[in-house]
Image (cartoon, rainbow over all chains, first blue to last red; front, side):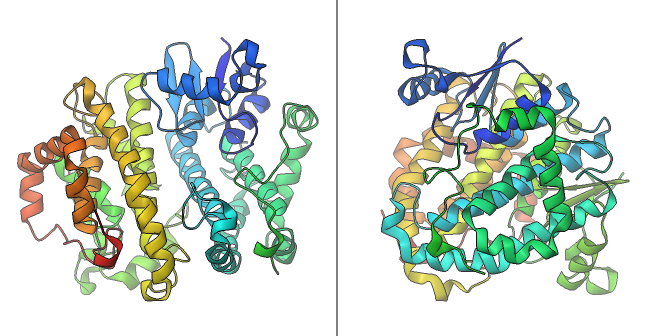
Length: 237
Length: 237
């Protein structure tokens, strides 16, 4: 069965965590909003679809599989992972991977807050000063805390959950590349402390299906409308 | 088997969503950090426990059940719910409830940001001005959006997932009471638009086990160290 992914067509955003799993799995899917408008694509059609789906999602991404309508990124991945051998077979392992995914989601949320500390509905330019203050603490306290946590989680094996590649590894790759895009100076300064995290991101990037995806037009570039934005004034060692 | 809950002993916080499920289920549990220090309670012992548990949690709450160590609130509830008849029996229903729970978690995160828009590690007093700006948008845009979403979700039945009480209903109760504590003026102004949400909170509060819990010393009071804080300057119609 072909999955339908419904997500904003011009950003990686939270949809990218779903795209990476579908690509690594080699699963057939349609990234609906990225179709030409004549075929149902575009942001306006996406908004109409979101209003029509049942149960109603609060926000995209949404994955549709037959009669199932699944929203919230971690929820989608917890369902997709076991179907595509991207989650451990045992209960303890699955709980661990979901916990890691939710922690990655927290890091992603906090990354977004660095450029929108007052309101997502305001322009960045209208919240530059608090953004600078928030980003300084994010770089100094939160980035080492999150990345150090994942570094320790990788002490016991090649992948976050040990011996088996899971969807959380794909998400950690995306978090790392996003932080490197948004905070290149800070990530360079931290690099000596997170060798396992950086090596995992490199290993993911070299996997054949992921490499093919990243080289394809399906992979959108990072940009200043997404979660990970390169505003030089928010970066620093 | 008796569950162990590990969470900060002086606040409701995210641990409260777990406590409510355990209480409604009538499940035997020990709220470990709330024990006397001589019996292993207190914040220092909690920090030591968190450092010792495997797999390591990023932050509390953590639920321990036998050999399972489960962190991240939504992860804990997705595991507890089906074990205690507080989740639908079918896959679509469980995915829906987890999606609702993750959306409640987003609302909880954004509530915390209203008093800590720059950094959780700074005092509120050191971020009063951005807090005022953030809270204004939260009251004006985000509260109606989140609460309106849950109001619509309740159009099809007495509970969020339809016919069956689920852990997401218990969490929505906590979110509503928390917002009423933190933003009494704003919640009063919104009340006419969210009758189903308010009625659900009242129904939850009258359930015998929840009522007994709320009247017991096990229920901590809302306070200005938790997620929902009453700072009058952040409230408004």
